[in-house]
Image 1 (cartoon, helix red, strand yellow):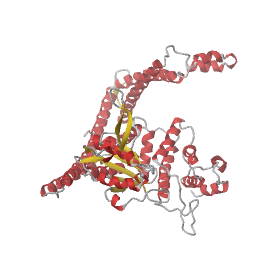
Image 2 (image 1 turned 45 degrees about the vertical axis):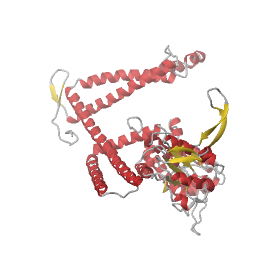
Image 3 (image 1 turned 90 degrees about the vertical axis):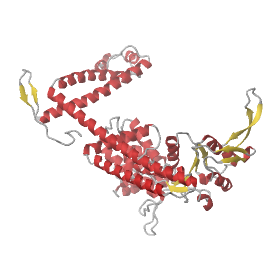
Image 4 (image 1 turned 180 degrees about the vertical axis):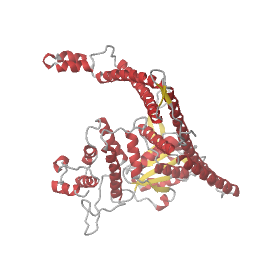
Length: 550
């Protein structure tokens, strides 16, 4: 570990004057210039990347000759009586913004190179710069160790799950040797946890781990999938543990909880394949699941003949892929009963396809079954799942993300590649913190976890809580708000986008009014009037009452 990490004192450096004499300089002055050198080096790297990207874009667009500079055009516009706008239009193109930015970046890069050379010429500053870089490298190494320790802990869990799965498939109890190994694996995990805590006790390492976590979330968001927050990782570990021992998984949950997205993520990342997929529907038939005979051109000679087209369940078994049954409680009861037999089959078993004349196939490694369904309530009209059918599944409720993890994902979507959070207004971060809290409140009310007797439509006298019929604030809704806000260069307050991208889209007017009330409680829509919302039934008197609830 570097002396800087241990916070050791350094001796006072000196620097040379222009005349060649040495004079004492304060350590703080040298440290500030060394930090400036670090910042300038990073900015230089960013500018080089920007310049390369801008040049490629302009070359791709066929732009060869440089047009008038922004300063030249501004000077022309100052002479308003003599401006030839027709000439300006010929000269000004949609590439102008990129071209001007490229010119500014090249000018800034030149100035930065000169400043870097000036700072690096001072030996004391250069020495301090090298210490700072070494400190950063030491911190990054420890942060990577923390990440590796986390992965090792996951691997220990998977190793234990695989051992249990192996014994389960053999239909035997754990041996004494197994129990001894299980104890050792537990010790490994405890020691790994202790080592992680020790490394994370260093403030710089703690901050770097969190920075890297946000960057990792940012990368996951860019791929358009699930973000593996701590609670999501725990859910994934439980799901994989049951799939490995041959138990199908049934995720229940409310609208917007991310049930289907999570199972797709598990299939793609942990099984390495795109899953076979069945969408729950009242019109579903056995042929949609197992397959059916088709007539078409199949032979090399182009003859029209009949052939059997395998359904998703059979393809998943033959090719060793996960099968996802989305909204399984929407499938007719008669079809589900036949699926019960399929759920008991294991890798290596041979099964017959009745729809294809009793064809026998072998279940390949990689096959597993996952399903989603809604929690039974008045909100969802679904089939009543048979108790015997449900007993074949490991069932779990997919919860909404906690507010702190929601906020982390929001921050990750707003940071740059160096994890810098640059918002146009200082209060914007606090606004997003309140949005995350409001999202948690809305989700609890929608799911029935919380009763709000003072909410719009509630009855405090009869102790009846208000409810949201069809509206909840999911991560998808939050992402829509963020994308639109960023696309418009943060031009308005966040309140405007909460309204336009979420509340305005509520299909039930009562929901829209209640959502407005909830957001008012979290200090949004201050100073707004009812006509700005345009929600039927929302008057100025109601809105003022909501705004007074802060």
